[in-house]
Every structure is written in structure tokens, then in C-alpha cells.
Length: 274
Image (cartoon, rainbow, N blue to C red):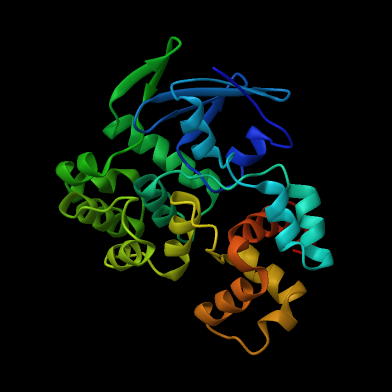
């Protein structure tokens, strides 16, 4: 299938550290969560197999009113620069389990290492599938991780994250959690998982469930805020108070402000200062 897009970059979106279920090969992106997916961008066309147009648009944030979002969050010179640099990126909706696994693994880690670990886990736990002749292994499911047991998980050298991953798999296995729940119900459930603190929870809400009011803060964001948003932060010290200051400032689309700030600062501003 083919879908027309404008002002959108598939590569920038899938390379932006918000989703861990895709890999790229020969100018094509592949994923296998519920079903195999192949997608590539040719100019202003997305060409894909494995999902219908509705599914692709939901996954890639293409239903978002992006021009209205940019206008609403454009409140200062810094965010305008971030929008200009990163405006082709969209906030994805990767799903609650893929986001939970990915961001539990993100604790004191980096994107490349997360992807390598998930790939190794997919090769072990994943089921086989193919699309257009390309053989794939599926994203590691919580069922397989839990049913294979804690000791099997140790082989992936996840360090202290091993207990976080197993706790997440066990909780999903024993409890019903899905996107039909309210945000408050999801928060209440996810915070029962060992390793899901405020930052990981915000990442799951934004990138897994597409809650555009969420504003996760990692090291890149906090460095940027200290440099460019100190007046907005005021006397806020805790994660919770800093997040509230930023969401009060950017409003209902704070998640897009976060995504643009993260992408711009990680690839430009902060990197040039360290």
C-alpha cells in the first residue's frame, strides 16, 4: 500500500529513540510485533506491507494535527529552533508492552544497546515470520519471557535490568493491561512493576500509548532544561515538580515539545557542549 505524507521523515522518526521494535535493512524498515511489517519512504510516499493505512497512521503519529501542534507549543526561541530542526519527527504509538520492555531496558543505557538487547531476545524468544521473502523474528513477548523463567533471562547480560524485565513480563502475564484502560488505571498498574518509576512511566505513556500530554525527562532533556528553561523551572527540584512546570508551560501537546527538544538537543545543542 502507499500513503502520501508531507513534512514527515520515516528515518528520523524511527531513529529518534522512542521505539525499539524496528530495524532497517536495504533502505527498508522491518518490525514484527503482532504481525510482520515492511515500510519504506520514497519521497512523499510511504510504501508498506503488513498493515492497513489506518494502522500505519496510528503507529507513526500521522493523524496528529501537526501544524496546530507546532503553532501551539511554539512559545520561545529555543523550541522554535527545535521545531525547525526536528519538525519531520512524529510521536509514535508503539503499544504498551513494547514500550514497557524498551524503556525498562533504557534505564542507565543507550539506544544502540537497547536495540541490540531486544534483537538478541527476539532471536531467542521470538516466533518466526516473513514478509516479502524477508525472514523475521517477532518482538519478545511477555508470555515467552515469563514462561521461560528468570534464569533463562540472565543469558542476555542485562545486569540489574534483568529483574526489571522479568517483573514487567510477570506483571503483564498475570494482569490485564491494555490501551482501553484510562490513563490513571494504566499508571496504577504500571507502577506496580519493579523498575517503572516516573520517567519510565512517562515514556510508556508518550511513546507507547500516544498520551501527548506526557513529558518524560532523561539526562538530555534535563540538561537542556537547565540551560534554556531555568526560569520556567523556577525553584522546582523534584522530577514531578519539573515535569509539572514544563507541562503547564507547553500545554496539552507537551509530548511533542519534549520530542522536538530531545531530538534537537541530543543531536545538536547538548552534544556540542559536552
